[in-house]
Image 1 (cartoon, rainbow, N blue to C red):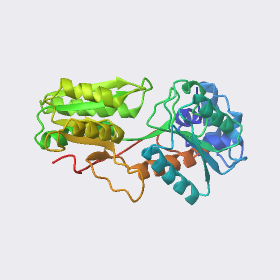
Image 2: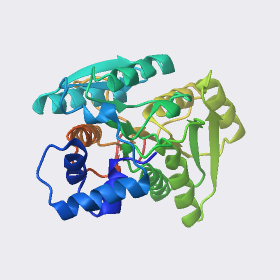
Image 3: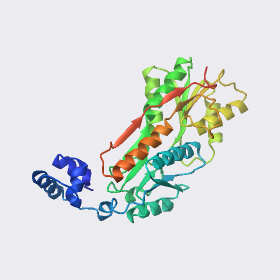
Image 4: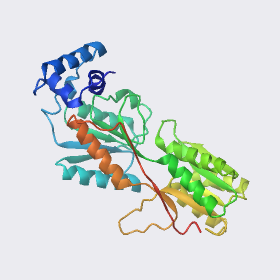
Length: 323
């Protein structure tokens, strides 16, 4: 579907100029207007009445959709989104979707009816893609959509490389990646890719346990993996939830952490402000991700240019589960 960004690119002008031509609400040179009108005709661009009316009917409210507020990453992300929105004069509506696509579609319909100004979406629902359009103010976290929707993510591939490198640097001889995978394309899949690429680069043996989501019993699968690969002395877990399950399972098997097996997670999120991060992990810049996503959405709402893809840096946090 052709959108205003495509028209701007074809005409060689800014997004704001295209908006002024379409909405007839600002000065535009006659020659520039002709270029935009020609681009509209060439691309057969159809104006989206919903999108055109956003600026006239702004509610100063934005919805954030998360799969569950119980996960520390999502709750911390929501906190920083709300803070950034408040600083910019917006209110946040939180949708705890429970990964129910019906709940998510309801918020998209609210957006189409101008009941909210924009959406920040963290979703793994299979059937949502057909409802997402780049003509609406939407920012996605980690997930790619068929439409050209702006998305924000951390450098998952580099995070995987760092994890493998840190385990190898700490004299691990047999390393492993443990995690799960969704059939929905998202950036977190690159954690395994980065891990494997680094292990191959450094010519070290590795194993992989990757289960299809949803996973009924992570612990049971981890026990089976450890029984089959007793020589593993370094593990990179796909996230901190997996890392905690892995470490608990290792302790149940009377294996010492980090003396017998070293473990690195991914996220670096604590359940509360007071809780301290203890085990080793790859830290995502959650506050920065929330801030960048919110700022990108506000730019889209106000028809200002923004990058289509924002990839933010990660870092290794050395805790008690590595030595």
